[in-house]
Length: 273
Image (cartoon, rainbow, N blue to C red; front, side):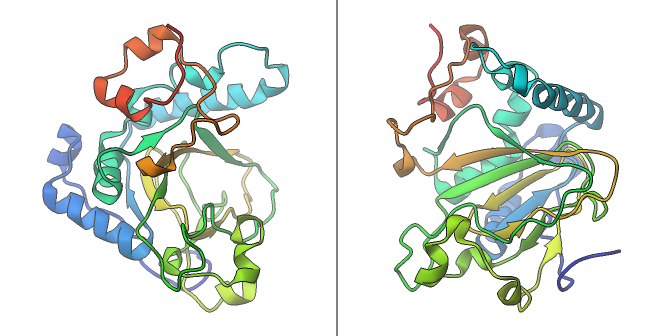
């Protein structure tokens, strides 16, 4: 198998058929997932969502992106079904891991994002999505921002599966690095540490500490590669006046059909009454 960096094991959680059927991890697996997240910076649960449904979602996502230039004022297209499906915004596997890592009062905002790699694209710079909470401290604090990724196609080396450096969420950057956009890491420094490309089936779920170094890789196929990205925060991150956050409104029809748990998760989100 073609890889980049040094060969390491992808931190995948072994989930039983019973857990999949019940959509509930055992306490032992919740603890194992939380440990993988804490020690490596990410955990993968493979093939959680139905492939046929994910394929339909992939088509719907491409339609949204194709129509971005023609967008009119009104409801955001990703605040409708199928994007508001509970299997995405309230995925039971990722929720258990998130709550074990960041407590019961985590929150998120809508619409969530999508990372797209098109055929012929180059190699992205190595970066973090989030720096250390208190960057001047000589040690890393527990995780406070997590991204949940859902690949809408099989991720392979050929189509540019994301390269990740496990354990780098615990690295404390010096001032020169942490003052750069996205806390960019140099190729020379990254080459001294193990990495892997995150190969996984469509419909898998990745729970990743946003401080982990990573980058998008070249897509050498003829197929566009989509991956959903939902960001979750510890409760102290709430910034109700931040521009463009929590402002898009969810329709009352969609909101009324969300579970109480999901409404609690997105409690700061505006919705039409």
